Image (cartoon, rainbow, N blue to C red; front, side, top):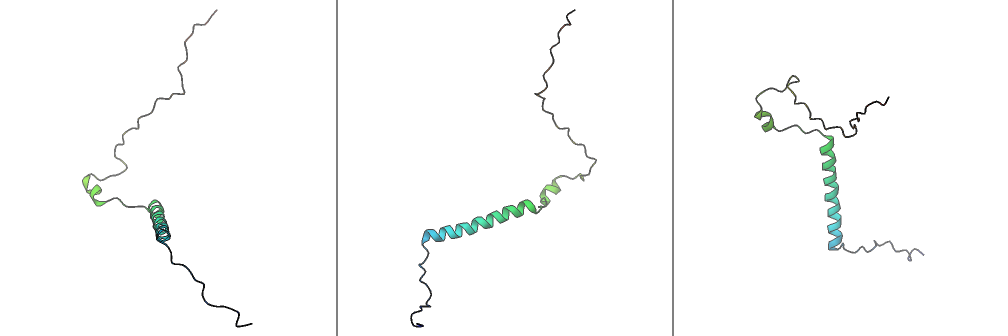
Length: 85
């Protein structure tokens, strides 16, 4: 009975070229996704070059340009009619 049991490791075929491409492509895709998620989560400081271009110190008192407002389409001008008596 003990002689009937076969404990040898199963034969696993070598992965094909396409299986390797798929495997490593999935690894690179996962790494790329992690980098993208980390880029969104972690704040990135601006480069020193952009800071050195402006010699004026930036503070809250700087004049901000007013935003251009889009014309409101939903409000239509009322027709002016004469009152009938």
